[in-house]
Amino acid sequence: MGIHEECGVFGIFSPRPADAAGLCYLGLFALQHRGQESCGIAVNDDGLFASRKGLGLVSEVFTAQELSALPRGKIAVAHVRYGTTGASNMANAQPLEVNHQKGRLAIAHNGNLSNASSLRNELELGGAIFHTSSDTETIAYVLTRERLRSASIEEAVSRAMDTLEGAYSLVLMSAGKLIAARDPHGFRPLCIGRTEDGIYVAASESCALKAVGASFIRDVEPGEIIVFSDGGTVSLRDHCGIAPKKLCIFEYIYFARPDSVLDGVSVHASRLRAGEILAREHPVDADLVIGVPDSGLDAAMGYSRASGIPYGTGLIKNRYIGRTFIAPRDRFDMVNIKLSAVEEEIAGRSVVLVDDSIVRGTTGRRIVKLLRDAGAREIHMRICAPAFLYPCYYGTDVDSSEGLIASRHTDSQIAEMMGADSLGFLPLSCLGELCEEAGHCSACFDGDYPTAVEAGGGRDRFERKLSEKNIGDRGTC
Image (cartoon, rainbow, N blue to C red; front, side, top):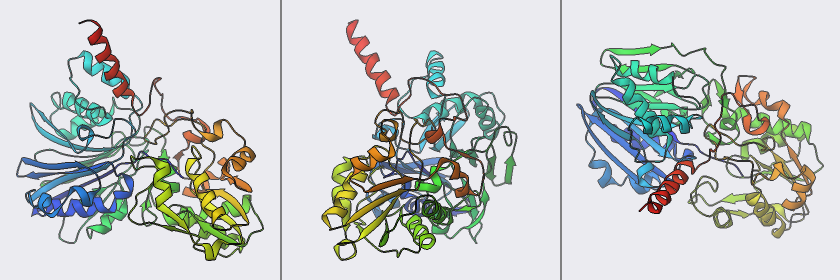
């Protein structure tokens, strides 16, 4: 079972006051799969900002009472969070609001900066005082600094992009503008759409556009800044084409919803291809193909079609339980109540079990045991990703090689540890087939990082720094 940073960002710009909070609520529902730690909405009511944020799912945080407390407005930004940098607490919930000399901003961010530590140190030496432990506050400080030197907010965003490195898809609002921006590599997805009544929408995935009745216009290009205002829509392309495109390949394998289209590639079709590749590269004589809900289901269909082995429903997911990897709770306990095996399908049969990935192996072992207990005669695991060998610095929650089962064991050893009869990973050489050879980042599989990376990274790096500082302070008292 997979890995996750992922956050989801959403923003609207309306030509007239609208139910901005309601639209954001629907958009966040569609993006809930990208984060379950916290969520938030900030609405711009004629230059006055109002916001609500909280820990938990969208349905838990935004009750009817909470939504009604937000005003109508022309601009709004919203966010669902699961963070690789920064603890799960209210301080790190987004959108992040900033007051500065030239006005006010609200920012929602998906991704991880690869130079966050050095930027933060520089800003702190310049007098900045940080209140959160997320990369988003670093982006906010850089934007604020550049805004004081710039004639407009979009110019400040452009200047900030000269400094920021790594992954960032942003939606931000000022008093009169909504801005969508994507880093020059395009690590994380971002797209725009428009409703029939003229409301522009920016979102992490196209599925969120559908949720609010918006038609897809196009993806935000890597390095592009799009500005929505009463004066029209403007595209700034100064940073386009300055770096190779590197959309995270795991967006197709796991992060995104199957009904989304990322950079022109259907996620559903990509996962079907993954299953077809696995059937081609790792054939086996079996009675049944099943997928692990939800991200393994499309690939299992692809495996079944290519192999001729019947597809079946062998695992049932409790729809009231979120993703085990991204939920901030004990993963073993979550898996224990999340899935159950259909014994009538499994008992006495040789099964091909298709899943999106193996990271630490905890979830996979539990799923294999479920199938064994249901009477499976053989279990052949087929994984829609190559083996994880390296840490990710761009927003995937693998911050070190420690704990990665494939970094210490062979495929046959992993199969034995899982309790499976065989194991097959998607070959690294076949990754390009998932996204029709478009540029992608696969550094967590091959160690080929598109940017320079800093030592001492990790999800809790800023919490560790704060803890060390507090210990030092106590020692000098």
